[in-house]
Image (cartoon, rainbow, N blue to C red):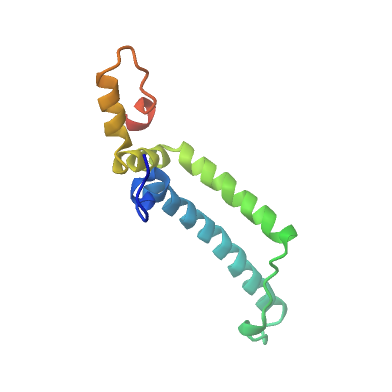
Length: 118
């Protein structure tokens, strides 16, 4: 079945709940990096104009920053809170109801969401 234009954000569990949490963690990591860069520059030269501080955005600098973000994101989604956010995305997209309806017609079905919803 085709999904009408501009509706995927309403039907995708990641768009509904998970992506917001990912963006928050990524912003926190970048904000920490930016704050440290500015603080270090001002410690080295207290008379420096903040507008003149250069942010090093080379891949060699950003890659470890991104790696740390990914590790924190993974750790977060292993927590109970992270799992609830994921489960809520499935619920908001109507996927859990669809699975329950499908299960009603199939015997001996394994519940893939059982660990996340208890």
